[in-house]
Length: 238
Length: 105
Image (cartoon, rainbow over all chains, first blue to last red; front, side, top):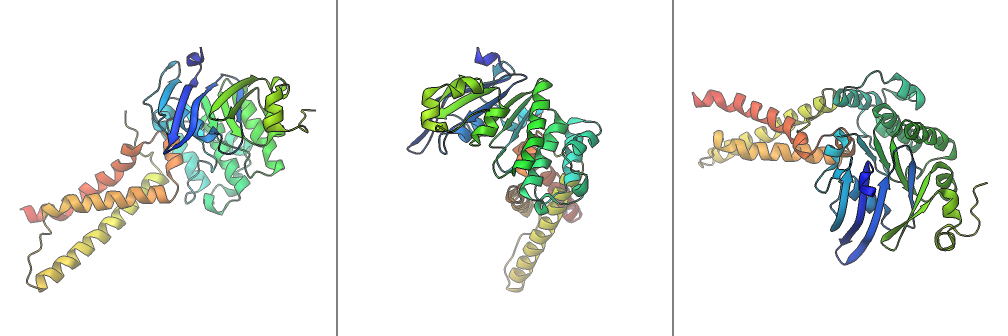
């Protein structure tokens, strides 16, 4: 049952005015695996992720966190229970230094030495800089350095590759893979088909307000409709 | 359980903004009251003004947290809307008590 997974959203519907964004969409996060929502702009990926993490209320459908109903939970409550949500613009407060983010995280969750996470994200050079002066790639490294430090049980990252240069993607992939190997359930989304197919263990196709669980990236590549309507003919894994 | 802002830069910044906004609002109220008094009109700047002053201060400080993009990080720290309000309310009440308590005796 999807409700047994650390995070699950089942049969979700959501409208904004007369626009039906989601009609019956589902997703679940599996421990130790990276699940990726793929789909065109406007297919409802971000809406589904925001509903799953308690940032938005669905019109109908069921939400579960840690095997329990989470229909009325908010992101702060889920965060205290072990979830992290990284929206497309990252999680950093632009006017605060990188160091103050790590200190706040340490204080909030009683965490130990942040040095390994700071080293892994290569943040030493700008620890005392306010986040607003950093480039998009550096901000992303700060966001995922904080994720690495927090070690959540569930990570939901909306379009983490958006705006990232290719050289900044590999360290990010290592963070995701490290977390998954430690048992974290990771959910991402995006459009960078080749990179995301290489990164992911599970592909979920978001289309026309609903979702299709396609299985592994190889199984997704063999899905004729997914190839025809989303990937196009030229995408290969090797 | 309600989680408040963790100790450190985020809490300090919120308390500093609260103090500055409170001082600005109180100075504005005092100036307006003095103007009204000079015009021969009675203006109440006693305890009755504390609640509207506090509401304005808290609204400005929390609004500033949203404007400066602090909310996604605070939510990931487990700090919800109530946790964001608490420091501004706490300091605002303390400042109002400091200002108004001497007049009560």
